[in-house]
Image 1 (cartoon, rainbow, N blue to C red):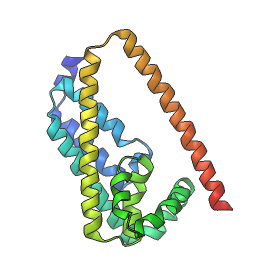
Image 2: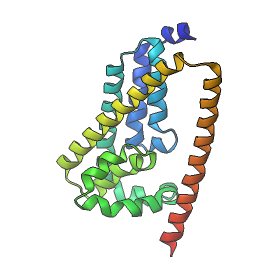
Image 3: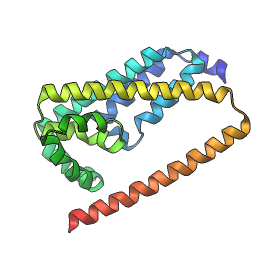
Image 4: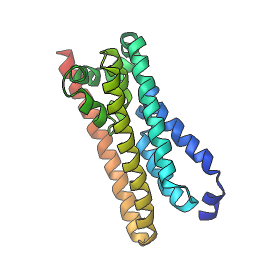
Length: 204
């Protein structure tokens, strides 16, 4: 396995991570595949493949930053029609209505930074920020800070997890795998219930 990983072209992995982190904010890709999954996986595999963690984090941060800017521009230009598009409105309507007021107040910059750590808000907040005309400089600074912190945190998680994995037994691996499956299933259930609750609130 390790020899296979080492045979991969490092630049191909960097390119995939750049495309994934860019697409999350620019094209709502995080709704399909959260960037944390790709970044942590790439970092863990990169531990064996000899990837440079600093470069990997830099690539991820750059993709996330540029994707956020593109999302902002898209929201500024096409915001209302884009967010009213039936597939987006049906799936994200409650979240959009919940987030919109916070992007015109004093907490807007904090929301842009924290939005990077949630797959739904990461997809919609840049476009929403552009739609409500949040200041460009303010958005750019918050988007850049959020992208860098997010990329560094999850790259570090992937590398440290790979180091820890090497030192543990097969039994521990099985327990961790089972816990991840259960946790992911619980998260999906919570997300579905939360979305239904928000839809009921907006329909009242």
